[in-house]
Length: 68
Image 1 (spheres, rainbow, N blue to C red):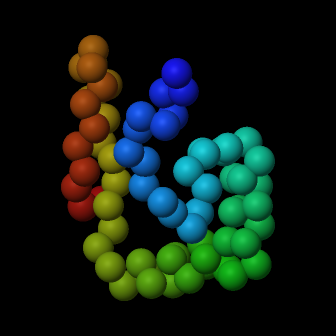
Image 2 (image 1 turned 30 degrees about the vertical axis):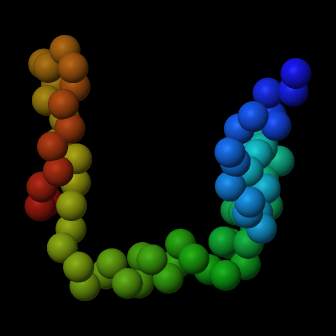
């Protein structure tokens, strides 16, 4: 019995396989060509500034977000 035939999987135009090791460098290259990081930085320039304040003595290292 082939269990793949018993599953109801969605039909998509994109591959369902994650394949991060090979796809991530391709994705980063496209983002660099588009200047995506610079566009995000420019868009956030006028927004509120946020930082992560970690409690140093907390055994669970809780992270709270707030204005810088």
